[in-house]
Image (tube, rainbow, N blue to C red; front, top):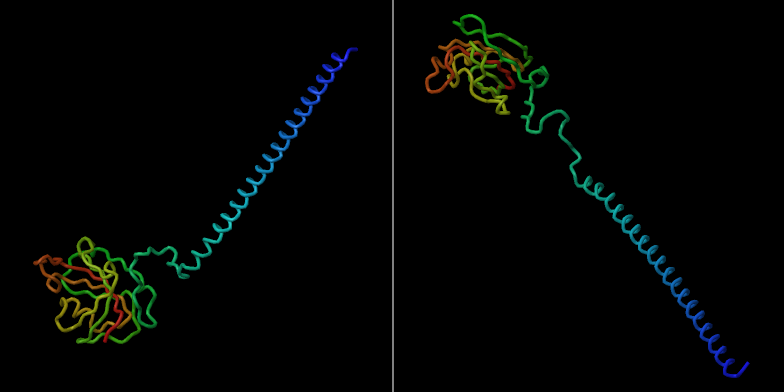
Length: 215
């Protein structure tokens, strides 16, 4: 073989060796990049997991902090929040006085005052000149339509009794009734508001009255 041919073969081998070396270097670089990408992906996943865990822990703490700031007492179940408070009953009174009574229409013609005890109280008797505190509901005797009620206002009424400050049917019907009683007053028009002049309820009336206090 001539020296010229041998030189060309040597150069070809060197080029082949260089190409092989370049390929190996490229493959090694690609492997490094792939490993770096995998490590980066794992790192991102780890960061996301850490963030979610921290958020979850904070989210779990928030209800506890809110509960600590809330009042411990809650409204009674089943009772509407805007309902009027229960009346203060006299000692030993029938618990039924804490519930609004029902007042229906009367029967027949009413020509005199009729006082009907519904609950007998155990307190002292009401005397003329005292101030009494009562809950009451008033309806028209003939049809039972309500026209007035302390229950609707959410508080009892207090007024002097037996001295002409209220209608005659109340003055005459409530003096002598014991505290803690519930009575029904059927009052003819002439002992109530007559024919109802001035926008007052006219004709015979029916009241159901609870005597809560007298002094």
